[in-house]
Length: 483
Image (cartoon, rainbow, N blue to C red; front, side):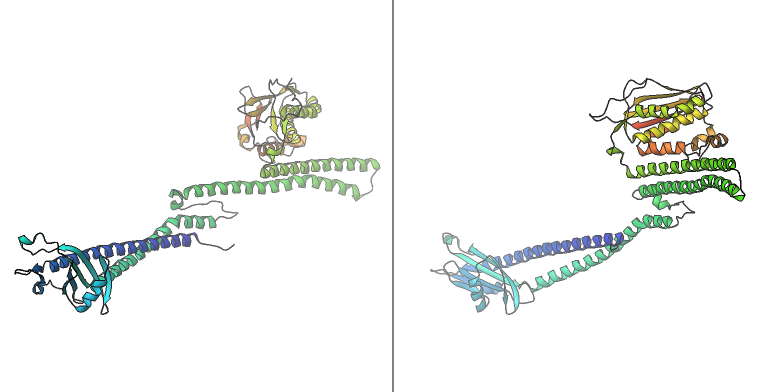
């Protein structure tokens, strides 16, 4: 895909918008100046036409006639060319004309205001009709003779004035456009500088340096601050994931190295020299035990990877509702021999309402198995592990409580970390790898739930799991209840 520049797009948009604005203002200013100049010019033409009409009067004598006194003609309106005028009475008698051509031109004019060219010069004319004779005797007041007056002047100076004004406006517009574009580019560069600073800071991120260290402008800019916070949170998440992956790889390699080394040592001892069948059988049994431990570790790692994949896919909504109580009972049945060997009783507290969650029944059983097994392992003999459930604000809440020594405060932040062991000697003795609680938390997270450790005042430890509640479909069987 072709790359593009946000800055260029913004600048181009601003320049186009300002060009359009300047062009619109130029056209509007030109139209207003032209309209105002024409009105002023027409007003001057009207005044001269009325002055020419005032020069018409009745002659003295028994039979007065209209006559025109041309000695008092007004001065020409412009110096570019002489003015033209034409006066006739309402009975069609021509009383005065500046030139013979004026009679021909004005005799053909039908509009009140007209523009024409005369001898290569543009003219603008005004036509006044049915004007009364202003200079007449009182006894002639009944006369109905009126005048038609046409007066024209060169509009060349008007056009030149308008061109000069338009050129001035255009030059001012270009200067203002240049200043506006310069200021816009400067403002855009200044506004985008926090992004550039943030990009420079992000460019320094590496596997050995996870600190963003954004500039002050990126932190205090309202539009960029959310992006800065999001990037810092993302980098912190990536750093944690990277460190977890690195630690996980190192711990997994260490855990795999131990049974492999023991298995290799056992087999090397068997092949160094001939031995009896009993010794071979004992060695092979030890090798099979080591292979079983290795297989259990690999199975735990695959289960953890599958849970993380489920988190990434987020496909739990497509699953059917599962009876949580039934999976708890299955886990308890599976751990019954281990509980008897430790002289521990696992009790199910009563629950009056059914508990459902959209999940894989096997995954739920693994969650309860890990929690109950952990409680049995650390609970003292002759004690009791209690599993209880309830509904809490739309969530199904399961608690697994024991009366053991509890989790030391310094280990609480790390209990869900992979390969973490609170009591390493006992974990090794029982065959644990420190993955049980990590798998449990990953599975709970995969189904949108939460898991936490509560330290009861009476002692021991209590793990609390909350999963989003869900209603079963009509064809599902009735759920089991705690008894």
